[in-house]
Image (cartoon, rainbow, N blue to C red; front, side):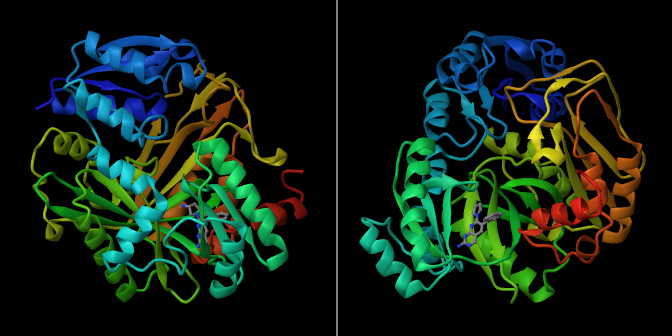
Length: 455
Ligand code: MV4
């Protein structure tokens, strides 16, 4: 088993990992940047090592200093959390070369799934439905035109090394294709230092559904049901829930079966997520696989009662996944609201600053994951999420009501937040029906502005 684990992350996920380690009897070392010196994670970990200044590239993305911190404190494992180095195959490999356990999948799998055309090929091979599109990257604009002709508009151009929505452009007509192609390549080059792009038919107004997977080193793979993450804006999820109520039972069964089959086909050996889009006809298509723990993992924990971080660590340490599919049940409904320090009225611009006062809700079925406290500072250098509010109840409507009550109770003073926006969403017809798709947030924003909110 692991004795001492380094957490290469910050904020609420660092705290979440520390808590899991305490329960597992593992000592923790957290790394931090200068502005994070007073953070909750630094307070709660057994040891803390300063790794540099605020800019992520000089601290939380600096592989050299992080590995040095891990070695010099005698760690035998590294947990990357989400974001930062969590899907960096080179980092994972370096951790292993330092004779430490990387808490995540085999680095080869990170690399494979990070290459979106490769992931598409693998999933297609495994018999998982993928959207109509090209199996290879586009070699010229001429090829893009030919492909678009045969696929039919609208099409989407995506970066080979992309994911999470960066390096993507949609073309609704032939006239928009050249620009989409050029811009996608430019953005891909800037973000991923690789300008290779590929093309798919664009699915209009789908739902974003993802399946939580857990696999071990011995070929045992299970799913922990699905999440509906359709309430999002510019690829930033805002409300996530489990299960997805608009999924017909027969489609759910197929989706879950396909996701497990996909994970088995690559011998997936950690926590991971298979991301799908579901169109208006209820057909679903594999989009990409996330080879990390995700922000929204607590909604799955709430409906299954399974501690995903503890299993992620145990599996990395070589333990067998002793959960069988028959033992994993989906009970009730869970929902997460991400509370961000942002100005909703001004295009959701981040709003860093000091938290002068904060009150978090509680009660039966309410969980708050945060690293923010009275008097703490929201730094402009990192993302603006200050807390995750997760509630669970016997059914979706009760869950929505509990979320409303919890949001009413929440107080965050000193910075602007999206609390009220989330609250208003929970009273909208489409949200209550569960019929909202990935295009819903801008629609809701327009409606609220017309009603005199957020102007
Ligand atoms: C798509 C798509 C529609 N059609 N691919 C976004 C993140 C990445 N995981 C894949 N994404 C999408 N891929 C096809 N063929 C729609 C999305 C998408 C999206 C697109 C534009 C604006 C917001 C979006 C939110 C979620 C998914």
